[in-house]
Every structure is written in C-alpha cells, then in structure tokens.
Image (tube, rainbow, N blue to C red; front, side, top):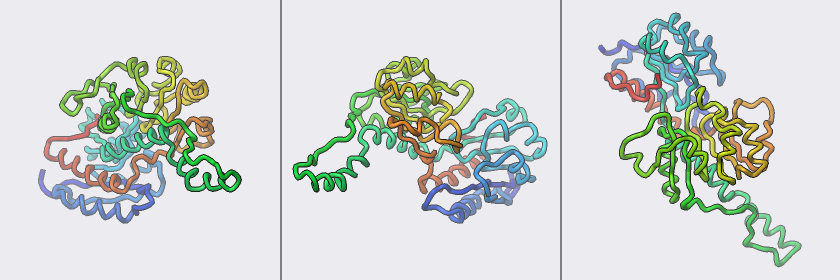
Length: 344
C-alpha cells in the first residue's frame, strides 16, 4: 500500500482519570499516528458524551477507511454502517471488551475488527486488589490504628491495640478458578501463582503454549466445584450472560469468593445476593454491575458482603496512554498483512 493512502478517524472520549487530560491523549494520538506512513490524514473526534450511538458514529466517520475507538456491539456494527461508509475496512475498539455483533456480515464485507488489549496486567492487578481487600481490608484496620485505637484509649486505658475487625484470609494453597483465559485471565493466573495458589481455568478454546504451564484447564463444572476464589475475565456473549446463576452458585464450595472485572451481566445479581446472604458466597469484589451507569442503588450495593467500584480497573494513566500506542501498533500489523487482536 502506497504512502498516504489511508484516512483515519479516532473517537476519543474523556480519558477517565484524574491525572490525564484530553489534550495529553490527543497529543499521544498525533505523535503515534504520524509514525505510520500509509496514513494520509486523520481526524480526532472529541466525544462530548460517554455513550455514542450509531448515528453519532455514522455522522462523523465520513469517508474514513479506518475508525479507531468505536464501541463494538450490534447496535453499531451492522449492515447500515457499511452501506453508508463503503470505504470503511478497519475498526478498532480501544478496550478489551466488546459486545455481540454480526461477525459473519463483517467478514463478508471484508472488514477487520480488533480490540486493544492494553490493560491486561492493569485489570488483573485490580482484580487482585479487590481480592486483597476481601482478604485483609487494610483500610478498616488502618483506620483503627490511626484513629479508633486512640479514641478507645480515652475511655479505656487498656484498649486493645492488636485488634482485628475482619478475618484475615491466607491464599496460599487455595484454588483460584479463572473464567476466561485471555490476556487478563493469564495475568491473573500469574499473580495468583505468585501467592502460592493453585490455578485452574476455563476458556472457550483450550490454550496452548509455554505461558500456560502450571494452569490446569478444566470444565466450567470443575471451576464451580473446586474453586476457593472465582475471577471472571470472559467477554459478555449469549453463552456467558448470567453464567453465574442459582444453579452455578449451588455447585460452588461454601465460602467461595467471587471477583468480577469483566461484565456485570455475566452474574445473575439476584442469585449472587441470595448466595451472599446465605453465606454460600463469602464475599464478592465487583468492578462492574449489570446496568451501567446504574439508575438506582441496586441491592448488592447495600450488602455488607460486597466491595463494588464503578468500572475503573482500566484507568491508570500508563494504561490509557498504552492503549493509543497499541491501537496504532495493531493497525500497523494489519497493514503488514499480520493482523493481531482480531475479534471477527
């Protein structure tokens, strides 16, 4: 392909961090896109709202051959998009996750769609942070040491200093069950093994290669039955929707811990609440809920047995900047005839 033949449009929203500005993201895009000689011109669209619709994307794609930053799901990736933009042949979502879309249609039209696996270690680290909070709750213990203990001493000179407020859980030799052994799941496995955990995993396709040594790949039934901790790292599909339901919880060990940094809809939230209240599930650490942003305080948010954050595992500054570099690197691989991170 000759130089300067591709037109690229980038959809860049709010960086979503407290230490990174839109202007810094835009500068990173400009610097990185200019390293690809096949790109003739590019436009960076500043998304003025979080959720872009089909109409929003279609109105701004124009004659672009490449669109980076599209939220991939069937409401956007459809026949109409390619009828209105026949030059469009490469689409990338700037995240790991994507929703169901018509894969066969995109293949028939010769379109390549990729995701951007920029936060594998980042999200795995956050999954383990949720787990560490459940195992130790350092904050509540620190609050007592720094303030609570001293207040207690005002009325009781013999107040206990070495005071536990939550049970401390050791992970050594416990079994981590990972659902979805992609890039994030693999990093989670590596970290869990570092804690001395036994790691079992289930994925849509059996993974092969030296990087998977020491990870026992098992059926979903075994994940449910054998795990002390279950960490979810699979995409949301028809098959995974409400995968963790009443039947699944019934098969699990008493006192299992659930971690979810993938998609909220993979868990039946009513079933999880019942399992928490019955103490079948010891605690759940969730960075995602089924409907985001939630329109009301869901019952799980009122449970003393959950830690819930607002889908922030992906937000470190280093990871956000890496997403730009990796998205352009993936496009360069496509130009060289070796597309990577293809999801269709």
